[in-house]
Image (tube, rainbow, N blue to C red):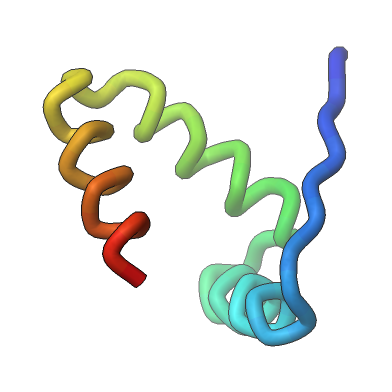
Amino acid sequence: MPSITIEISEDQLQKLRALAHEQGLSPEALLRDHLEEWLSAPKSKFARVRASNSER
């Protein structure tokens, strides 16, 4: 299976670990699950998320 590596802040890593723990998943499994949802979403939803992230 192909893999990717991304850089995230320590704060983001801690939040990711906490969310994953709450759901009884590894951080990797949580991201895979949500990535599939994101990739299956309409393109217009992606545009809205990207726009809100660029405002930060």
